[in-house]
Structures are given as structure tokens and as C-alpha cells.
Length: 452
Image (cartoon, rainbow, N blue to C red; front, side, top):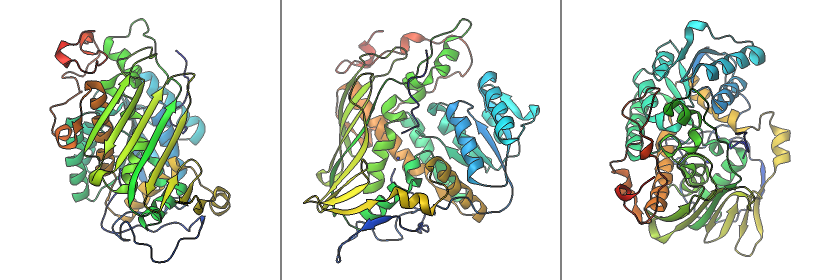
């Protein structure tokens, strides 16, 4: 089956580290009024230093675990972000994906990873992390992220975690515990919620924290697009191999697209508010998906403290109206990511991001590169940095919305965070799977009564 669309072409609350970072020069027009009450005081939230390239410093060795499209893109983004970076180890479950990345690094960047530092199999991540690297890029299917992050942290390796970083409650709890360990060890951890390193979003975040829209009263977030890619099963593939190669369509591997993709939009609202939802009421369905056991649309009402509601909508169906957007509403105005503006209640523009000014002021405008600039800066300065905690919260919010839609019930934050939910199979090996377990959820019917 051919690819229909690249999901990355189109992001937890801010990471609190005790002191605010240094913001890049403001690229905006604004007429903020006097006497505005801040939503949060400066110094209580993090603002990244969005320089074009990371600071110079000691040479760093990086390993890549997960050599698919996102992994190959992320390692190139890192090489664009900083000088003095050498890719010294690669790991993947399957040799052909690893070979593709190895070839790309030679052809595009002149870096050849030695054969004895190319590892294949379910334990490849351990071999990569144990190979003498300083930093690791983890871009496997998301279900594996918590255990790999835990191992990297135990070994004192700095981690880049592609989103989402948890697809179930057990994984979320492991992420949160490991994030605290990483902080204690002084490690730098950055996640793939790249809007946190995208200048228009960062400027909007600052304005909202400064109080430009007043107290937040609600919002809307959307990721509606056409169908994503899928893989038809090929001769010789075991159940496990097919599912991993078709991972984006299986909920145990991806968490369903409300977690895997729509987490970006949910995360933006949580970042802007600094809060997580306390309950979710949602619905969804499967209309036209070709493989896997996921839904292809969700609509969720997330309730936050003080009666604030977020409407979340995501869809992956061809031939429908598409929208990728976040809106945050306040007592004094509205921020809309569609046109990068903040307007007051009468519609007057209070702030507008100027992309042409950004291009004039900066050589680097790609947030996928800028997130790695931030990562390397913290490593070379010897600073601990934690984005895993907040992306863990955003990932669990996606899980909460998913479970509400799957069950047809209201799901509380406390219940989902403590749930006995573990999507990782007991055995990780190529071979047969009990495919009767992987069924499309039917709301209103207990899971044990559902049949394939």
C-alpha cells in the first residue's frame, strides 16, 4: 500500500526546570496593553533559546534506535542542528530499515557507521546504548519508548524521545518515574513535540503567559486529514513482523492516532494552560481504515479545572474537510494558530507573528532542527532538561480520550493514570501473535464480551 501523506509535514505543558531560558528576539507585532495580569510569572515556565545552531563544545556521539522515516529524518535534523556530532551506532528490529539509514548517512553526510555498531533485533536498543554513545534518538513505534528511555537513563545517556512517549497507563507511569531519574542525573531529555521549538508557537505561548488573552476559558484543537499509510502483509512476514512494519495502524504499537498524531494539538493546549484535563467524554469510530484495529476518527470533550473545556477532534479519512489547528480562548481575547494572531474580544489584532521577519532574522526556521539545537545546548552546558514529564502528561491525555471513545464512558484522570493497562506483549520475538486479541473496540460493550 503506498503512502498517502507524511504525518510529520504539518505540540505538554512547558518543561519546568526552575529558571526560564533565554528567548530569541521577538519576531512579532504587538500592542499589548498596560496593567495586564500575567497568567504565570516569568521564571516559572521554560522558554527555549531558539538560535540557528547549537553552541560549540565537546564532540558528541549519537546512536539511533528506530530506523524508519522519522528516525532517518531525526538524525539528519540533529546533524543540521550542531557541529561536532558523529553517528556511531544504529539499531532496528529489521535489517533493511537499518541499511537504508546507513546508506543515507554515507551519501548525504559522509558518515559511515561501522558494521560492528549496527544492531538488529528486539534488543538492539541495549546494544546501541551500551556502545559508548553520549546521546540516543529513540524513534521506534511508541509502545517501546518507556522501556528504552528507562534503559538509556540507567546508563547515563541523554535521550531524544519521539512523541508520543506512552500509549498506556503503565508506560506513562514508567515515563514519569524515569524523567525524575534523568533530572537527578543531570541528563538532557527533549521530546518530539516540536511546536515547543517553533518560533510562532513560542511567541504565542509567551504572550498568553504574559496575560494578553486573560484567563483561559476554553479551546478547540484539530488534526483532520486524509488516510495515513498502511502496509499489506507480505509473504514470509510473521504476525509480529507485519504488525511492526504496519505499526501506525495498531493500537498496541501506536496508541491509536489520537495519541500518535493528535497528541501534538492536545499538547499545545496543555502547554498554554499549564494544566492537564481531569476527565474526558468522547466518541469515535472506524469507517474506512484498511488494516489494524484502530479508529479513524475521534471527538473528545476534555474538562479541565474550573469548568474549562477543550474540544478535541481528529480524523484520518480521505475526501473529508481537513484542518490542523489550535485555538485558545480567554477572557480578553483569542489565540488562533491558523493565522498566528491574538485578537481581543472585538476582533482587533493585538499580536501577529511575522514569518518574513523570522526568515530575515534567522537562517534556521525548521522546528525539527531547532528542537535538537535546544537538546545539544543543554548537553554541552551540562544542564539538566526535562521535556519527558510534560509530554508524558500530554500522552496520557490522549490515552484518556481514546479510552473514553473506546468504552463510551467518562474517564477520569486519576483512574486512567492508575489503570492496569499494559499494551506491551509478554514476549518480544518474531513469530505468531494471538490475533484474536486485536479487535476494534465497540463502545458500550465490555471488552471481554467483544469479538473479532
